[in-house]
Amino acid sequence: MFDIPEIPVTQLPDDFTDQPARLMLDVREYDEWDAGHVRGALHIPLTEVAARLDEIDPDAELFVICHSGGRSQRVLEYLLRNGYDGSGVEGGMLAWVQNGKPVESGR
Image (tube, rainbow, N blue to C red; front, top):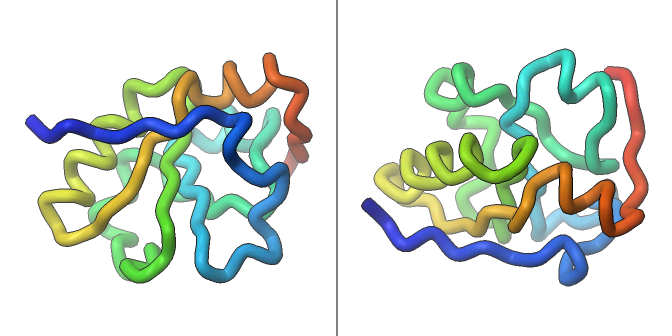
């Protein structure tokens, strides 16, 4: 097991659209993404991460988010084993919304 760092949502920008050196990776399912996600995030559901690894910039500062934190921890363990470095978003989308951070919906 890896010691996965977590970052509070209060230390993250509201929008990752114009953040080329930073990457918010959302690993939730399609219906969860459609219901609301962080602006500018990259959506790759947990079950697709291995097949779509080439879409994740290994040089970007990486943050992984899911609903509450469980899936993001699993993805980060996988990514760390494959040479990536990153942090989980503490509390996931639940914390994001509870802290009044903006979300967009749809694809």
